[in-house]
Length: 143
Image 1: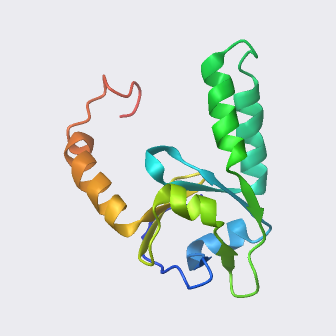
Image 2 (image 1 turned 180 degrees about the vertical axis):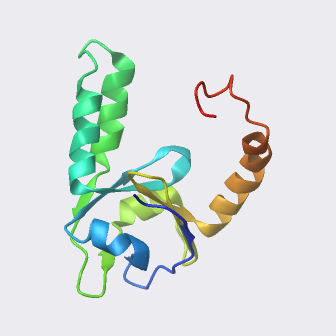
């Protein structure tokens, strides 16, 4: 399971060193793709395949299902971490997420997310109070 918050830097070649705690789970290969809220999702290859199958279960007649699948897959890039546990983030994905040198990488269970550091700070500050105020009725069965 991918957990925690890390603050790596993007190098001049668009590479990110994976957080040490993620390396074993991501060592066999990752898929980077557009995430929601302008972050990037980083899936282990097997988890990415599971997610795609779940999305494909939506009927072909579902416009929102087609739209989501198109955006999710058209931005996807499969990468193998190098010997220094670095992955290259393609320019189009860096642009999509507005990535600068300073990054925040968070573990989100079955995936990691890559955020521009400033964007993560803004998101976190906007959402933290709602997180604190979450009640069982909002997320049934949570507590």
